[in-house]
Length: 113
Length: 127
Image (cartoon, rainbow over all chains, first blue to last red; front, side, top):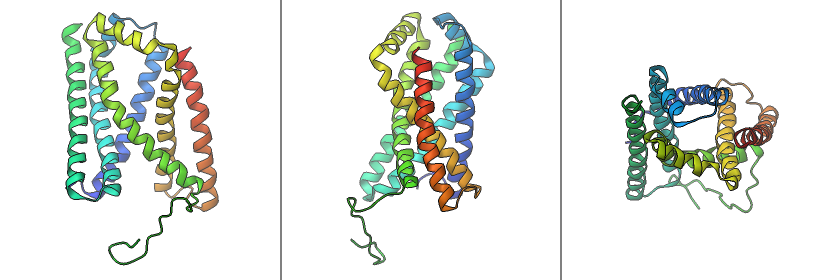
């Protein structure tokens, strides 16, 4: 019902966590080490294929991580099946909408630049 | 109160004295929820910043306000605390630091280190 078996969720939560941290560190170092940000440098940064791929993977990792975490919280605290389903659906919608919007923006950078 | 299999559950919140490992665990959850709900907000800011020069300047203007220091601090603290507590859980998965004394000590380290590192990072972002 919740999408993954316990073991899959457990593993995915940990591997996605590690990727999220590595990506956060890399992006922070790039932004802190670089020159003052302007629109052209910002677009040029994300137009690089390697960062596009890594960012897209980050979006996927983040969505899985957030979903498994929120799912665990919902399963712990919300017992009535109807409300549980409603809240889960709303959260899936929020996460998927954000994710697709992010991926769309990341892929369109190439067109803009 | 009773659970479904008849065992009593004791949930008098005012009388439960949570150990520090419990406190950082609840914070790990609460911050995880906050971070999840920041995803749509950050998505909006990120996509707007890439859309056009106007959008970029709009986002830069929004993020530049001096009164945002507490917001930055709270967001960075959420991330760093969630991260540090998460590393502690990974170590516990590997059966490192399971003993009560060490678990208490590592909880204190997570709580304090997260606050200090978050404060420094926030200063770094703002200044």
